[in-house]
Image (cartoon, rainbow, N blue to C red):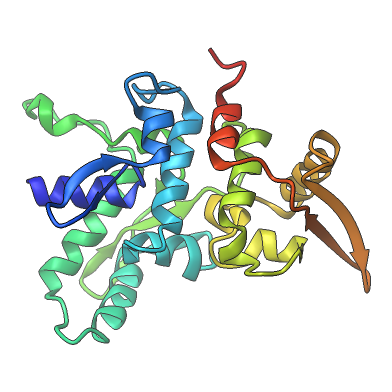
Length: 260
């Protein structure tokens, strides 16, 4: 139980376990957002849920393959349970000690349980079993209609690529700065396409449409001209990130200004 909890708080970027004693310590994100005097310690703001999703999907030190596959590898808006399981198995076969089918099933089930809202429960089900993950309210992944599979019915799932009003410009701004070195590396400028489709980019992790990304970048350049400017090169729209970005703590707190 303790080991499991440690995995989750590290995945979501809430705490770290450094030093020889491996004692837990809140990260800057954990302290600012979820600490005793944090901006949203009870997960009441939808933006916090999107931030947790962002942290889990882009975590460079503790990556869970389910998050990476759905958010970064699988480009389609729909996938099936069997399809995901085959991808998991192909990845696990590269390990020195491949995982069992049972472990792969559990990994996928935990991921789906994090995002997919349960169906109408049957009478007699224990109340504790009905508790859902806070991230399920995002509607990021929805259960679809089953289709014929190799072992009977194969469940399908849809990743939401629609407009996400719960992701404010301030949150998008934070993620651009936070993930820039992962999707744009050392470049000063990157194309709109990179921001929308590159691995660990905001557009890819949140599944934002090209139209939505275009509008957001236009607003960012107007709201924070000392941080971003727009440019065109070889008929390609680009965003330039200026070296005057605020510190991550300032960017995080800005997300919650005006929401209290």
